[in-house]
Image (cartoon, rainbow, N blue to C red; front, side, top):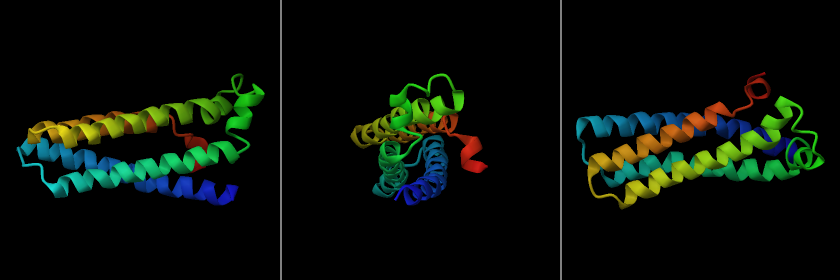
Length: 144
């Protein structure tokens, strides 16, 4: 189960990151051109929203079944090692904050009435979330 979750978390990360990047550029284009915000635009934003949340759910499950997650943090040995601290503390906390920001951007866009503001809410909050996610990816273990 652990290996399967690890592969799912890594594989879905590519899709989630690509979806976030695509939606950010799509929403930026919509805001800059003054395009009307349609149901199609909301659904496009929802794809990245859903992928990010599925990624978070798999990551949280993995965090509690992995020897590099909660058990490493609970043992107290994670704080002295930068790589262990990244995996056990920084990666999950910052990514939860990122998903909250993505959620705020999506929900806010649904409630706003001005089309440009709706696009702006999506691209700004999604971009901040993406930057946070990219800042805490354990690149050495993910790509290496």
